[in-house]
Length: 163
Image (cartoon, rainbow, N blue to C red):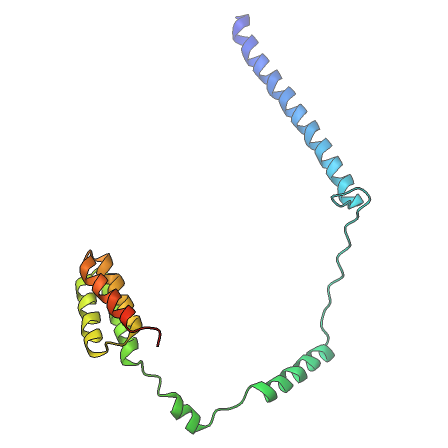
C-alpha cells in the first residue's frame, strides 16, 4: 500500500521543487534585465547609448511649407503634356516585337516550346538583324536539345558584329 502512495507523492514533490526553482530563476533574470535596462550601457565599458529624440509632430505650418516646396518642385520638374506630345508618344498599343515576346512567353509558360521556336524562327526570317530575337531563339533551341541549330543561331548573332 505504501508503494502506491510513495511514487505519486515523490512525483508531486519533484514538480513543486522544479516549479519553484524555475520561478526563482525567472525572477533573477527579470531583476538583472531591469537593472541593465536602466543603466543603458553600450557594448564597451563607459559607453552609453544615446537617448532617442522625442517624436516630432508636424504642425499646420510645417504642412504648408511642405506644400509650398512641392509646388515649386512641380513647377520646375512636372508639366502638362501637350496633345501633340501625347500623340507623338503613341497610342499605347504594343509593337509587333512586344507582341512576339508576349506570344513566346505564353507558349513557353504552357510548355509548347516547339511553337515558341516556330514563332521566333518566323520573326528572325523577316528580321535577321534583331539581336534580341536571335539570342532568344538560340537559347530556346539549346534548351530544346537542338544544339546544332542553336550553334548556327549563335554564329548568326556573332556575325552581326558590334554595330
